[in-house]
Length: 143
Image 1 (cartoon, helix red, strand yellow):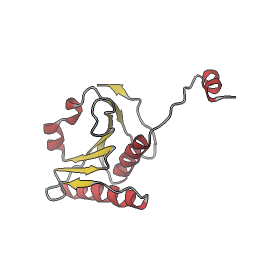
Image 2 (spheres, helix red, strand yellow):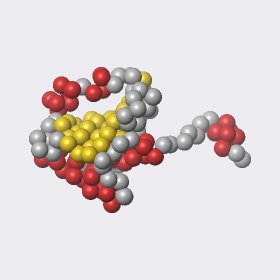
Image 3 (tube, rainbow, N blue to C red):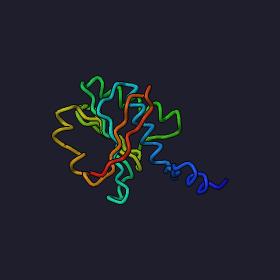
């Protein structure tokens, strides 16, 4: 049975997943392991040529921001993924980790509300990432 025949018979349509999407999901899962909150993946493909995905995370303390950022970088380094650039580790209010096709934003709550990237990129498809034990992702929604 071909993929299209299987999709037709099962009612489920298969789709190819880009490596950048897999990386964004991995980042989101890692952030949740260190108690990141309100984790969202914004699919900005077609909206900008700068990157494919933003992963936006809230950390409720500077200590947690640092722990999340270091954990993501360290774990992905073991998987041969290295960031092109990291900023914000000096203040920890907005940490940016740039993996080129995926840009990670770790915010303190007030900074996340102030910069409001979700509104700035309201045309992006948004997936909210849930706790690792449920291992679920919500369906992407339009802005």
